[in-house]
Image 1 (cartoon, one colour):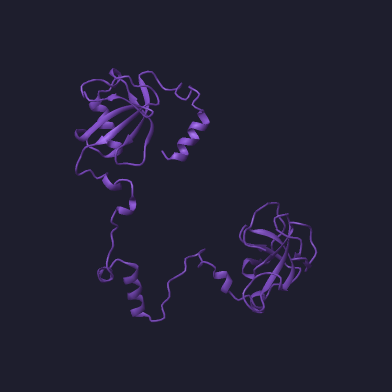
Image 2 (tube, rainbow, N blue to C red):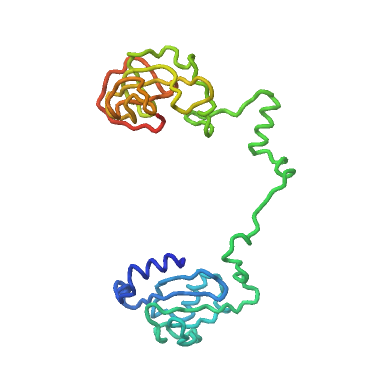
Length: 272
């Protein structure tokens, strides 16, 4: 447990003597520290009827030090109470209490925990493959791309339905051609969300961010208050509608046609 979590626990319980009220009889909550590890195990529940050998086995699974190389030191705060040195004795034989600490002294000269070996992940050598070895593999994206380009020098990776490259919208051109067939007064449906309404404006809106040059928008009056505007763009009015009934939509997100009004509130994240 980190220092922050430990501080939070101490703040919540205020060490009021009730933090261990719910612990079952025969169990004791103790902290485990280690001579090589910076992390600590807080409030681990140990069976008072377990032998010290059993306790070592349980601690081994948490810290990695083999039982034969452990020395268990019982502490109450900073004070040493004693050594849990008889593996045949049960834990309850010793004067253990809730909140005490068992400090593990790691005596293994080849311990993996030394020097942060089990704490510092930066010390773990990551697997790396050379460019030459990667090129030799056949079941890779690089090899697939190489095979496709060998068959067709103009091949481009396919775009999955519903996917798009990050920020691709910034590079799209929304010119007069993009709003061809969209006219004021037509019924329409806006995606995402299938929100319905009528077209109230078609044209450029310099106040809105977009690709360089002329950028066309479609102003929509929704049937329900599912928009984010009222027909204005940065204070300039382009069409009339009530607040939250309007929105400026990219032409590719507007479909005109026979879309009668329906009572369904949906949301949208791609409008201005």
